[in-house]
Length: 91
Image (cartoon, rainbow, N blue to C red; front, side, top):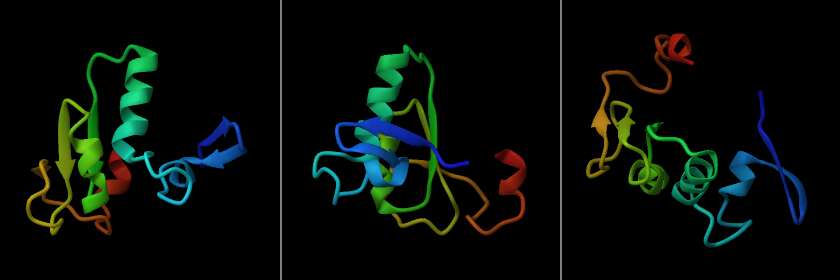
């Protein structure tokens, strides 16, 4: 399922919304913070595997990164990678 957002420029997907091409100030962290704030969410978590996930990790209560993610990401490493069959059961 692809999430669509409506904005000044029409409908766009989440990945396009967070793209540097769309808005240089739009990051995953900005999008997550805005969603959490606007919806009054008290607890949040994130899951990622690359450097562009860092801003999102910093905005959620708990952040998880997949195995073999770049060193230095501020997230707890889980023992699964993006291609592991186990992940489909989580989502």
